[in-house]
Length: 375
Ligand code: ADP
Image 1 (cartoon, rainbow, N blue to C red):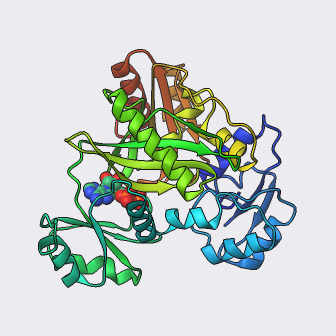
Image 2 (image 1 turned 60 degrees about the vertical axis):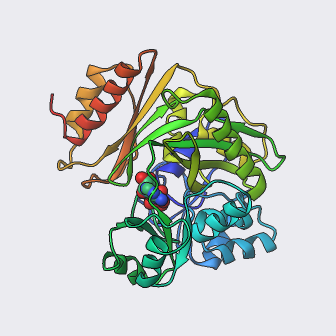
Image 3 (image 1 turned 90 degrees about the horizontal axis):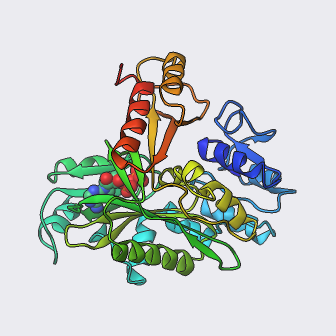
């Protein structure tokens, strides 16, 4: 797996009982996954020779992020390396402009959008063009964004200057007046076998995923089936292999629009470690190795995952003890990262029959670990 973050750490963990030998390409020896994987190559994923020597001896290469240059992936494929997901699919998770264009071609519902060259074009998009609904509009750099970095809500032409400073193409989108955000997560193997997890609700705070509720409360069976079918269709049409997260907006008139695609294990699927018969990490590995996929069904009526962000106290140990003692049913997943304010350093999961209680337990533990709740 290329990338040494928490996704690689948890994928490695899921591979242990499957007997998978796991090699990691990590930026540094202290990265989250590099701390636990034995076979680690430290190197730069942007360098083709590093990727080549890393891939030598691997049955398959997969990713914990989407930042490996597409041309390097093509070069590896041409040299006979099994790259999964392959560059023809992955490019749509790397470039939001390419993703929007392809999904629109496929008839997948998306927010109204257009690549814009300068602030004047943003104004035209917002106020003049057909379907224009005025400011504010959302601007996104097409590459390199994550956790809300690379996304701006702009209220006028003057504010639209900032996103162009990065020198990367900018995508303008209507601001969707959504009821909530959902994610439809599916896994597909090279054989074309696919499974769909229950559709979840993801709650974002300041552009960062805060809580995920599985299944999404109150979601009609009809809309849930539609969202799953949409995600399975995207996986098939784009030729995705592995886990695909389709981030969605649910609109007040009962539609779903696609926000983003991620072709790797995803934060909206962390709940599956404790809450589903087969986790997203295990199924991602099964898929990229072309093994039969595991059962995606939930194990409890409700599962809630809450991210643990770093707070002002670098030492979380006291809070960690307290949370374990307070709630023996709490599942804690720490990533081995240094605590910095706002950084994702772990997550907690709870499950049970009573949604309010399950939510309260997860929110309490995540808040206590961060230091925003003190009793
Ligand atoms: P990232 O790549 O950082 O995850 P996203 O494209 O997912 O960026 O956007 C981050 C958040 O910004 C979304 O989760 C959503 O809350 C908000 N957002 C993004 N696009 C829109 C839009 N067109 N309308 C309204 N809100 C949006």
